[in-house]
Amino acid sequence: MKPQKTLAVIAAIALLAAGCGRSGSGGEETPPDAGQAVTGDFGDLKGICKPGSAKGSPAQGVTDKEIKLGVFSDVGFTKQSEFIDAAKAFTSWCNAAGGINGRKLVANTRDSKLMEVRQRMLESCREDFAVVGGGSALDALGVKDRLTCLMPAFPAQTSQVGNLGSDLQIETVAGGPSYSPYAGYFNWLLKEAYPGSAKNVGIIYGDSPVAKVIEAHTRQGIQGSGGTISYSEAYSPQGVPDWTPYAQAIKSRGVKGLIFLGSFADLAKLEQVLTNINYKLDWIDTNSNAYGPAFLKLAGPAALAAQNNLADIGGVYPLENAAQNPATKQATELFAKYAPGKPVTLQMIRGFVAWTLFAKAASSCGDNLTRKCVFEAGMKETAWTGGGLQAPVDLSKPDAPAQCFNVEKATPQGWKPADFKPNQGAYRCNAPAIKFSNPMGKPVTLADVGKSMNDVK
Image 1 (cartoon, rainbow, N blue to C red):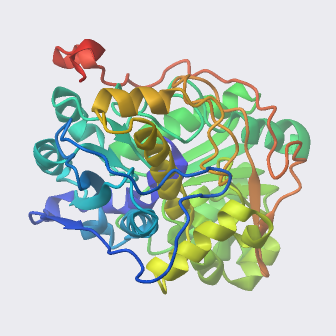
Image 2: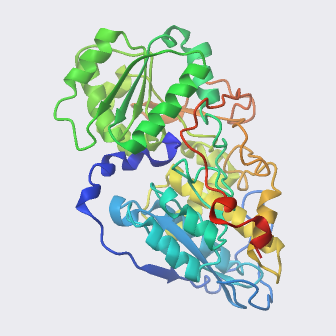
Image 3: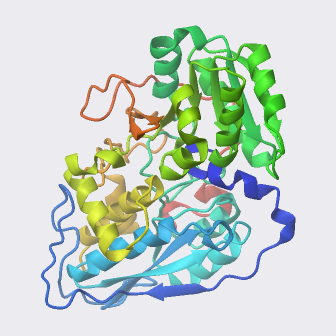
């Protein structure tokens, strides 16, 4: 499991016994803007959405007029609508530009509510052409059903080992399931920026089976970069009434670098205590869920000034510099138009990147929009950037190490790029490969459900 993708739900894992209600699916097609011409170009991608006269119903969920697509989200549990907002923004813009060769995109929200992944996947298998631009924290619960019904996936995020790198899925986030996605980041931290911290790295993580997998992967990544874990401790995701014992333990162990695998609200409380006892680490890895205004507000200016908060945002162009990057600027403008009042987040950009891939692949299939065609078209992309929203990723190699990374620093004035010595625009693209000695499981394959790519039509 990749920490940058689902740590926001760690606190929720402890509350599973509370149960969840049943979710419905809502398809929504936003009408084109009346009287306003909209181009189907996004960033450096030309004509990924355009009018046409596509004919026929070559696959489930595809007709002359529309394409039904599932958008997975835990919104009913987390109350975070980022993937839904991204789907609304992209499909509204794309449909206003003519859709996919004239077929309008219909985004069906599949609210998995943390524990209802399989129920929503079974519904999607009955109605949708593919699943696009979403993600669920416990996504491994639905992967066998997805493969059994031969459903292609273009997710914004993948979370559990069973789904990371699973078949018939194209992940636009760099780093295959066999490799640490943070090799470049850890290597920079421990060998270049703060070499004095290498032998004294600490990890604090939420006490749940999900978080334990993250901790194991993180440990392997740190060790592969020459670091030593000198302190590791779990905390109750139900809440810690006083973070002083943790802060005192960090100080007494002489921890120099800290990786926090949990809610950034809890990290903010810990940092305030560390600052109050006058202990400053060389660096704290907040994980990228903290990348946004909420963490800055919770931590407060004193802790932000005292502690060196860093986050690897996985090669996504910095949001605070959106005006300097045409694709990011265009995306933020579309979010402002179609999801007004919603702050643009890393997860929304991830969702948008996945939608651009689906749109380009589907557009290339013309009338013959089949699952086989759209999946194979997506797999041909060897330097995918989502039009310029992120560093290039070779989608033809699903289990390859991440090449590029970028690091953000939290300051009292806001987030800004850290001095990580980028060598390719906003990114650094010379990351080493660190292969997991124990990947903690394996992704589900078509063969696991008695299928093969020959069955995909």
